[in-house]
Length: 101
Image (cartoon, rainbow, N blue to C red):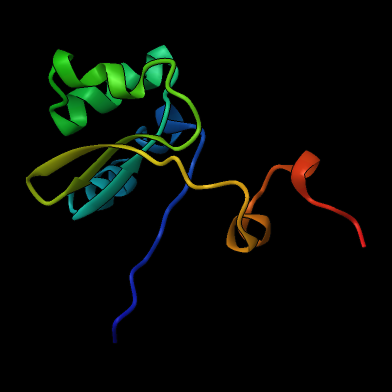
């Protein structure tokens, strides 16, 4: 109740080579898509019907930028989360920003 399965991968080609996984992907209501390599971008653009005008959001994009797909809605995003906050210091995954105590 109230749970959402999550899949994360850096190998889109391998993931979508499985028909079972492809079915799961096609039935997903929410997809968060950051920067993508050229080959993966082509596969995902086809699978998600990303028009060329929106592919630039996942081409050489910076951290915190990309596309969100929710149902039939596509939203480009750019998250400029303030780095001088306690919340950022807690959430960062960048090793060089994590202070050792």
